[in-house]
Length: 323
Image (cartoon, rainbow, N blue to C red):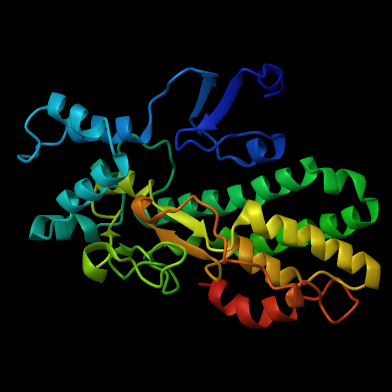
């Protein structure tokens, strides 16, 4: 890892495009994780190429030849994935049987190409969601440590370090919210058979696709749907990097001035829970600035001066995360 980092012209990332830019995050990645090393200016296999390669092997009458598929995927990837998702949305009896299968032994095709020890689809999806939430923790901590604010403000730094210590404890206790993608958990984001629905862009109450019907997908259905689901996002309504991190800096400054504790649970919910995360189809993932989505300064601090206070988490979150 250190040798790679010495070369500024090399970027290390996972297959879904997540850049690995700090040692802590690297150490937390599961065994057998596949890495991509990309030189600046070098192209690599994108999500569109991955989906194309999968579809090229599928016996689908609507896709005549692999050459046409490649041409189809060359432009306007978001719209094309929308179309492909509808192609995969079938409802015959044989597909229903595959969807209901959980064990690897019952549906080995679903696990094809995966380097995982998971014995069931639910176990794999649980771990995949954990990876996403874990990445938010390490990216946020990395952004904070590299910031000029953290480097210069020693008093504030102590408060921020305590915040991330407690974040880590809560995330461990709550198993990194892996249940969001687990259809066997009643608190998951899907129904009992594993169908997920897009919650719409950050500034919309519902997904407006097809007059409010909304994008939907069941990654438990087959390997192709599982791969396409990897393009869906857990989007921060109040943006992590543009809004939540600066708010944490401001909260640490306020806390150091009045000798009170930062409201751990408020920021925890914003960063890691569906209080602020929306599951969205790639078409509905607006990466522009969420101008109207702001943090509430009135919630930055706790009224008590004791830092180690988890009454809210113990009373309101524990029942939700124990399943």
